[in-house]
Image (cartoon, rainbow, N blue to C red):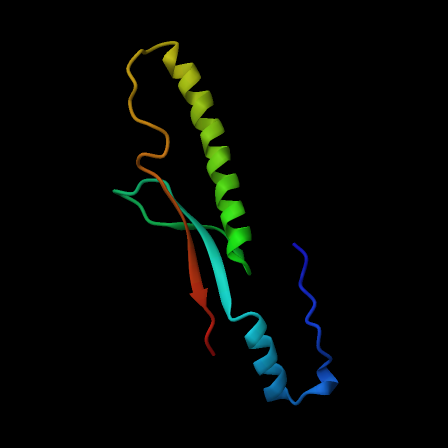
Length: 103
């Protein structure tokens, strides 16, 4: 992961001014989260991002990887059994939550 460069010089501001500038840049975090069983479990963190767009991309990537595993499992199971147990994602949840940073 690349670290973002803050476009300000430390010598240009006092410590309190620098803290305010940095806080204004990174005052929110977007967290992609996944819950494997909505009735019995809780959300876990997939990844943390500075933008909603990146958090949503991470969430969609995680969902597509889970779908690939689901499809592989169903191909193997369908050879043995014709019963459709439940749809992909029916008991799972993916969300992006926004958190505000405070001092």
